[in-house]
Length: 151
Picture 1 (tube, rainbow, N blue to C red):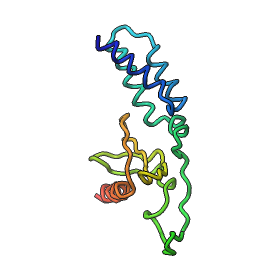
Picture 2: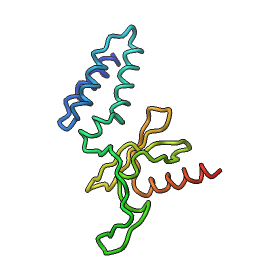
Picture 3: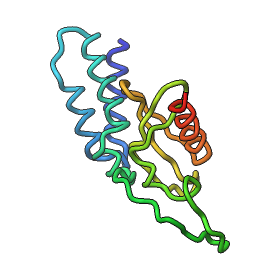
Picture 4: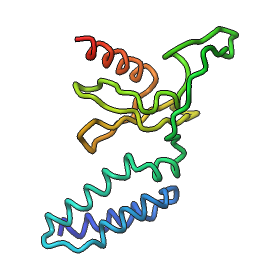
């Protein structure tokens, strides 16, 4: 009975209007994949959901930027103030390490959201989990990584 609920849930998610096409492909494959047990099938589906959280093509289809850029030496903000270093930009952080929730994570993507603000997606090293960081959280994670390296 729980199995049918999970399959129906997957079917609803796949039909969401703004679901990236690559995410649909990944989830559909997991749902259709042959398995020996329901536990194995459930594992395939959980892995697929986790994969959509950091798959480069899914992120790009969902308007995340995944290519790093170089930070200009100096830029001027809207108020005419000169901005340098870690306090400006977005995509130049891609590929940088952060220390977040007690572990190393890598910045894998950036998105500018008019409602929420800038977000950076980080993926923990040696894990499948990801999370989205706001600017202040990213800066804390970068500084924590620098302190971690200095030990």
